[in-house]
Length: 459
Ligand SMILES: Nc1nc2c(ncn2[C@@H]2O[C@H](COP(=O)(O)OP(=O)(O)OP(=O)(O)O)[C@@H](O)[C@H]2O)c(=O)[nH]1
Ligand SMILES: [Mg+2]
Image (tube, rainbow, N blue to C red; front, side):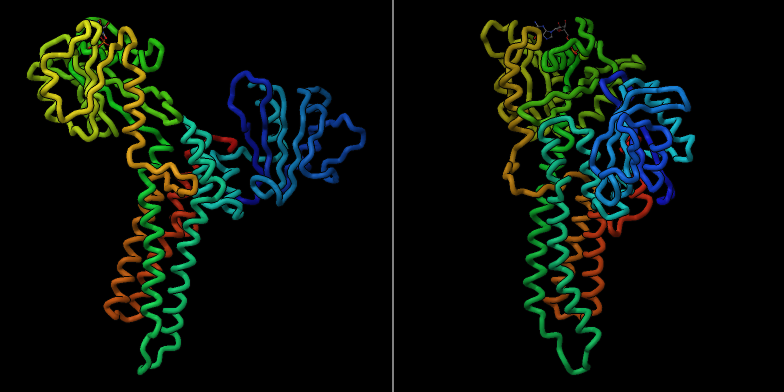
């Protein structure tokens, strides 16, 4: 991956569409476009043309017109990558897009790697790593909350928060370095109290950020909800009813669902990932057993369990077994098939006192609004929805923030216990390195590569 190359890729999704965009970035972008583009404005030269303007014309392959296009010109350094960028907007035909891309590549341009445009923006200092991650989150967002978290991060909210903590730590680190450099055998380091206060303050900031992580991750990836229960209780019916579509096969034969089916819905802007699973029972069937292993995995990894019971049946031993396995804190018991009870409650309802319960009829779509409300409450429990709150949105950021926090605590303890400045300097350097990892300044190369490789081509 060479920074000096001019790169190009199709930046829009490949499928018939109104328009499609081919993006070219690098110092040859403009001259290469000149070779293909015939402007409708006589004598127009893109090199001399004003930046951030659109130009109408045709792309030609030799004498053969390929498509009528608009060219968007963004000259360095005021572009996404900070390099010269040309975006060719043609009709959104896969073949036309591929044709134009090929013409561009034949002129000595290299096909961009996944995420390479964004990587250039990062390497040229236009974005920090949290903003890079925000771009990816925004593209992949599945809910309004996901978009909001990504946009806040893209605007640099998290970067600024981390930078503010770094400033505080830098200040103390500089004082300590100075006291090492100018240390006099008899002279004591005189700023301990002041340093402790400053570092405690930085620690509080990090603690608040860390407290936001669960909220941030929830906003980004949504609430993972596993539908668990014995066969035939109506798990797949409930999935279909919530999705308002016949996604999963429903029959009256126990053991219908074999594989995991995952689909998302939005509840008041929160993404909820519903995971339908195979009914749990004892069986010799190989396929069903494999399905059940997957149910077990979903059971263990989901944020919330919907334990579904058939309210028209007695509470048998297997159901009691499942109830005992679940933690009432992250379980909602669904009393399905309430239509069969003609307004009555199941006789065994008393056994469920520890649980939140919702009575529904998946078949007749009753009780679903109440269920959605409960899911939203559970998903956003303990979460502050304050505008000014800064969020950590993924595990990578969370882990680095934790490391920074631990290093700070060790430094504070060291200061309190009159430890030598050399030790303090090491702890503060650890803390600064961890903070630098969040924004991408001290992040390991392979991790960076992985982050960019998960992008789509053309971004
Ligand atoms: N009366 C009534 N029948 C329902 C309700 N929900 C589901 N059923 C029926 O119960 C049977 C089983 O439904 P499914 O949704 O396939 O059950 P499941 O839990 O996914 O079953 P497995 O995939 O075998 O584990 C079907 O005949 C459904 O029509 C309901 O609310 N009321
Ligand atoms: Mg099913």
